[in-house]
Length: 424
Image (cartoon, rainbow, N blue to C red):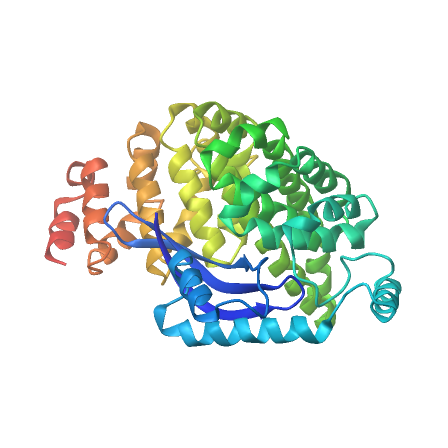
């Protein structure tokens, strides 16, 4: 995996007397041949608290120390940091003492406007100092829990905060319980919690704590629920097509996009947790292969499709998972192709290179199994014309040739077809 950090806006936080640095982390997964497979961008923030800032502070010296400690701020922004420090000092002097009567009145009015919940203020910045308040708010209903998890998510996006967050021993268990009990009522709440789990799952040394909180089990239940919901929506959608209800069709599209976002982060958490073979086998027993194949057949989101293929590439390495990968449509005879191969048809002929490359890698892994190899090279599968056509695309040429060799295509197709493929 290749990570690239891009620094962004540097601004002052007057409430906490701090400087906030916005930055973006771009993660790119590289294929076996160095081609980019999937990229994800995360917007993060880093807060630099200035506890000793006062009118007597040596601003140029403090600005230099900030740039030395925070590599995200470029040296060209030294004067901008100095200006922010002057701004913070000026605001502190104007605000004066926070214990005055007017200050207390404003504070009481602010609390009333926020419904006595400090998390509902739109201008409030997330802070580790308020973590206990966020945890308490998760017990106060769906809306408060959504706001609280949003705050925790902002903190969790900074890897430096993760260990501090885990100092609250009840946090992970509480998030898992809220996801289980309230997540099905609010997709926004579920997505917030899943992205928090994703932040932790990126680091292997946090996995035991995630297992202890039964995070993998709860994420699988979310996927199972969304699979059932999608089947119901598909039935409703077929009825709407007959009566041409455009407003309902737009609603289904909006829900579908939200659902794809939720499924993407769910599978990302699971693929991170599947580093342990035992955990991967448990996921396979819970039907993860079926859900991944469903993604390939019914979804359009490129990142979700590539992630599903990457997960299947990983699962196809172990022979214990092959029976699930060989599953065929119910009620069909033995001559029918496995459902997975049907799903791969559109992926192999897709216009997007990352999707095609990952599909070929999956086919290559499957080709080491005799039954899959026979299915891939059979005339009814339709893969041969697609593979011959892909020989024209230089980015896919090495993968296609490896697949042809692994599947023993020279011995299984006619000499004229093989000569044609080499000529192209």
